[in-house]
Image (tube, rainbow, N blue to C red; front, top):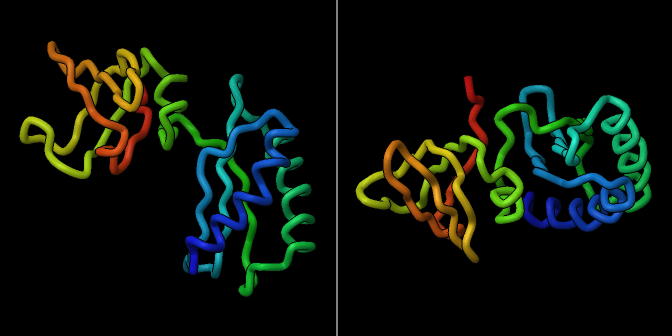
Length: 152
């Protein structure tokens, strides 16, 4: 059920975000201790601010009320991805070439499931990560979860 709702939410949200010059990083729709939460994580090249989050919240809230396909009462939260931004697409990896990332894979590569390294480049559907003194190539289809890491 949640997958279908998320797809419907994305269909409503994406045109609004495009119009505002924003990117949809992630949609979460799940039951939490306080009840159902619809969380939209948004971003743009220079980062998002409170005004961006407020504008999206107002626009999307009205649209979702009109569409009325979510059965449960829910709280809408709009936020930035933060420092440990999730990487959900090849475009995300391309955008952050040169940055440190943590990638968990669906299957072992050279006996490992977790890689932390600098994104050197992308090639087609592959991510080339510099891990220590070696390069590791990971197919996007092998990525279970990926996030930027904070560099100190």
